[in-house]
Image (tube, rainbow, N blue to C red; front, side, top):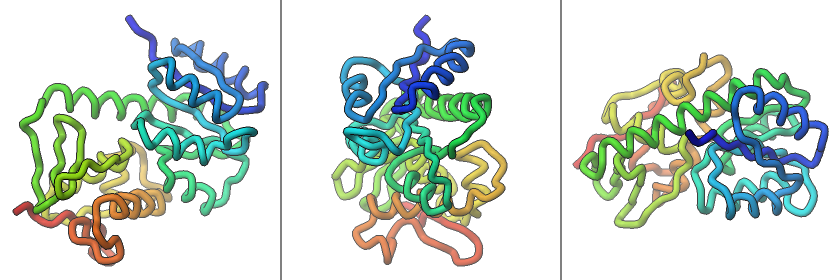
Length: 235
């Protein structure tokens, strides 16, 4: 049986060594890189299930590496950084990361977060393979194919991260109904809401930037002020 593979990318060798111990003890296969370019090279050679990506690195930093990865892959990405302000976290999430963990961190918490991301990722892929091509949700020119795990707008394929796709699919499943940020966060992240409001808003903004002609005047993903978000009913 194939072991799940995690790519750890950090220029601090002691952190890489520490994470190697913790994740290996949980039965994962580890790949190690010490800068963004080395990480991209691994992705050309190996099938990777999750990436733990440091922000501050030589040659190619984590932000640039994340953006490059997101051009081609939907693999879950957890960003690590000593920069822990809300704006730093929002920026990391906005460029495609699925989670953001500040340094110093608890290795056991990071392992738990990685497992949560992997469960979500594999669940989405499993549902897609079971449903096949027949499950399409159509909203005028927006087509959400949950079988292929694809989104098209006016016939053009849109690349969404796993979290973005999960949010859009959730809104589509409850077409016309308003879902609060807490409901969205609980369903997509499978974690207590706490301060997840900013996280949801960042992801919704990224979805709009990708699927809307004018993100400031959204046609599909509507804000109901003081309540939450909804996707208008299909044609």
